[in-house]
Image (cartoon, rainbow, N blue to C red; front, side):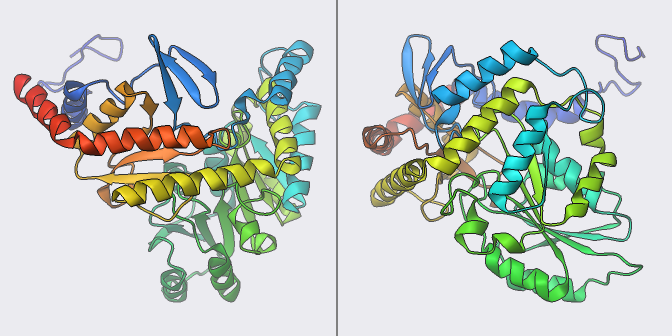
Length: 424
């Protein structure tokens, strides 16, 4: 048996280190047979927040999470270019070494002020944010309670934490959380940390954060809310679902990402507890990774300024989401939640969803294909994310493609069966 340096190492049983992925390989082969692999496609050009190019075809982008359309905002682009001119392309160090620049600290102060919190820490990505903050907060005697539909980074945060117990409660169900908090014994000076999201990224459903906050207050639990998909989009000043529901001051820990409304790459966690600053010295994913590049930080700063000064962005995304949701509902599509910037269309199975995704792409519309295990309830979805940069005409064009998809369903399914049979 060859070692780690071998090219195709096998054990005495004849199985390679990759054999455990054989079921995944089989699933992937089915997706490839029906068309382009949705998880391995490349855009030849991105022409703006709502347009891309594949070969010679222009594509409407309807699956990018570019909620406010600020990736091509002039101020954000100029801020990024100026940061490169002044500071170069990267920091080459972590935040606790040489990786903290004045721009990192300024963005932390401005995010904290926007959210009305005394403390805010910026991280390299949104995923790392939850990984670091949750693991840093939960000690050996603490118990983490997470929503059943929690994002992968929240689940991974519980795995990195040193706590003994993680409890799942029913999705968006404050009463179920109340019962679980009542039943779960927390001893030896431990605490309860409840983790939910504001807008759930697959179905597009919204959490009743105010009700969760009441439950947490009643039990003395800490509430951690991930508003990655809702920061900048909801609330009078763009502070998310918690602000829209009037409970922003009740949130103990508020996390978000730069890769959605803030038009960059990075993440942040803000807290109403000044002691949160202590975690800079214990959070491993913060301490042992390079800090965000200056261009990313400055682009996010410019996007934050837009969130605070341009409420029309929120007005437009709300209008476009309502337009798209109403149009799809009128056609009879099975939609997973009420109107929000994330609109998920439920499909019968993985092969059909993949075939329809390919058909839409050929017709000039890019959406997300979402399949198990990354979806709630083992659902197969065509997932759409609306942008403030989408126009009424863009949404009408997307709706026209979905109507054509519906009208041509028999032909599309027949083609799928032919492809699968030919490759059998």
